[in-house]
Length: 394
Image 1 (cartoon, rainbow, N blue to C red):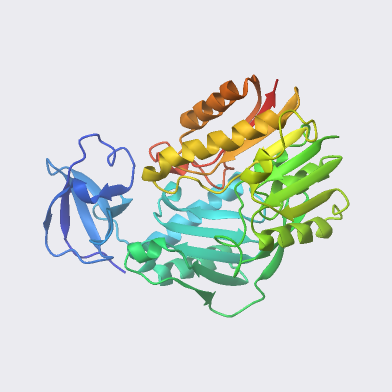
Image 2 (cartoon, rainbow, N blue to C red; image 1 turned 60 degrees about the vertical axis):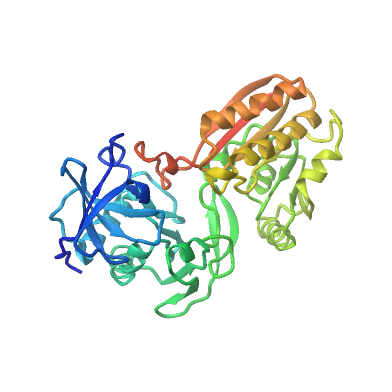
């Protein structure tokens, strides 16, 4: 699809955010338009002094009015463009030595805003979460097939955010159907994945390095894994020599998947799972009971929007406070946040506040984030969403 239109938007970029590489132009930044830009179409973007900022796709229904694709006003946004971008993204993953199952395209960090592609062995799962990107889905699929030659591609566009972009939620095979139930390897462990029914694209690939950080902490320890989901931290703890592991999740379906993963790895004698409300469980454990040597907190995103941030801070503080109170001196707290609005500095302050209220001291053992297949773009703070701290509680 060659970009031959000359629709233009003039925007306020007083803070130089867009010029420095952030791809989002908000509705309140748009000063005026020339031409008749249509939903999902490509527009040229200029600053208030008519300085060129580049090209992006436009959506009048979205608060993010334009998502930038290139700084070159003359670059064609067509099949060749997407082939180059996807080939570069995959070459980067290969250079960084990423495993067979990894994220191939991480949206804005790979210059393809609102596009997510995960690779599970020889199967790809695609999400196109904005109208402009969805309009190029055929070109994207063609490029993915040429670059990665997958056995199959599945679409997981069953995400509410698409409705804000004026699109329907859809899921299904792109091309020939295949068995959506797979097994993938992570740090020597096997995990069952269902790309049609699992969370997001079927499985969370971003905690791989943080799971491995348990190697020395979990050895010989009694480990409580809260919000275990499919057992990622729990099974790594068992693999690394924990004497006892209990994984908790409010979802009975997640607990069943975790139990299945434990059996798949021959770890079901050590790692047990049960459905529970984590907040209630932690509240009932009492102070310094000594039952657990390690407590893992890996909750879902408490702050899915900036307006929810105050409530999220209270939630993170509460669970960390309760976990610290139940750990014996010298025990370890593994605490995570996947809320992009909970910036690393705020997360640390929140944990410090919890420690102060719990009358405990902390010693940092490990600080982690997402792995290189989810790269952090320094001009786009939203790409740094995952935080993981391993702390010794004194």
